[in-house]
Image (tube, rainbow, N blue to C red; front, side, top):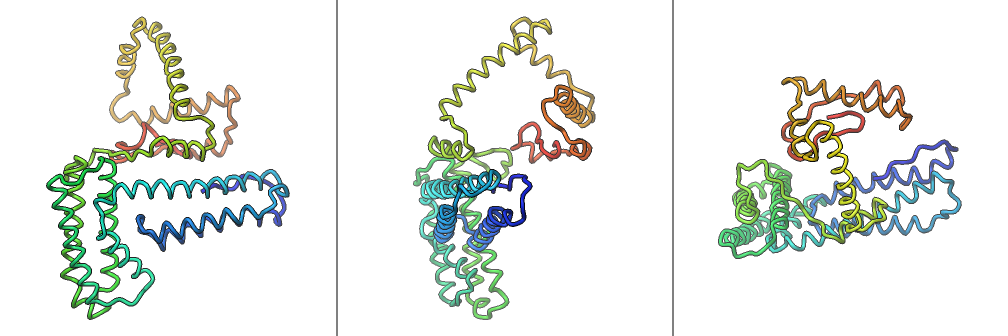
Length: 347
């Protein structure tokens, strides 16, 4: 969500775009909280309706009457809403691929959970019968997975497994909402619910193991979700990067060659000639004593701050430098994060 650009102007002007951005942010948060099941058609439809409505509302404004800061805010908000619409299309496409593993049982669970959110009158006996049918279908899909009768790419299968986990979590909330508060529910539903909850857990595990190749005790494997060339083009457009994926690859290759030239220069200074790989291994072994890595990272960061200040490259406010902090990164986060994270602190 875009943040408002810093500016100084009258309070009357601030109430236009700034308040609109705050309202849109809160509206979207409320919509996603209420329609919280990711594969819900109702969620997609309602969000799409809202994004289009806000875009239409923006079109009614007189852009030429805004000052420069309001124009920036207008464009940021418009870009954000358009990006959200494109993301809905992308998510729908990926969900459609995974649908072969979800079938009608997922839609039935979504309907139950959405009725609960709306507090629609619920017939406990009918709910129990529906859960029994859901259980039978899940068992059938699980059998097809076990016999390798469903063909699906790895990333889509992984997405399906995550959706199954999400359905299970929402069904648990649905069950907790009624159990103990509705005597007929407490009589009819616990047995079929337990079967469905267990079968969802088994199905997600079977998909991960048989179709994704991730064993139950595997905590390290990372399965990517490719968005394709079109998805990448849309993300580049949203970031206002006027290059195609092919052009970015070409730029990367050009910069890589430049880096290799510089690496060879340093390699020669270290006495390794043009064999910069050996020079790299030498540098990698120049580590500090155990337990001293924190101090090294902190010193390097301050070296960077002093460098940009000395060469007048970036303005570093004194308070920003004073309040800048260092934190450790957990082993779990190190699996998915880069070597370090920056910002208002370094990790």
